[in-house]
Image (cartoon, rainbow, N blue to C red; front, top):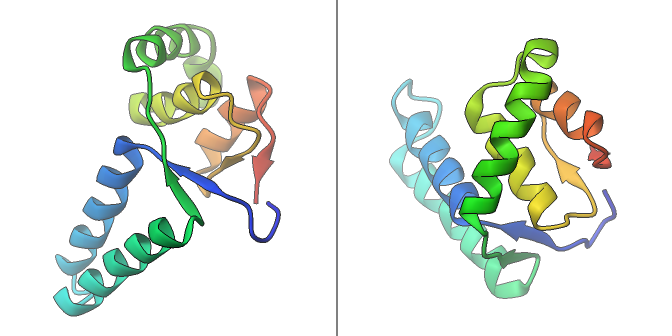
Length: 117
């Protein structure tokens, strides 16, 4: 991924990130203050333009996700939420798909998305 590239933030991303911060508190990986600070950093990235809010055509995403599930889940072992993320990127015509999840990355690559990092 290029340094300084703009990243899309869908409502699904926002939920996933916020939930990850909150989940980090449960096993004491993060304090409440650290989780709050991490969310503030995300908001700062939105204000600076590093992240941009993106709208998603959910009916299109879900139709495509169903197709990806049928074609790829038995091969890549992807879970439904992973498939939805990849389908959303495809519907949004993303130039690059960023993930650290191996199965999600495999699916994204299989359907023709450039994967990073």
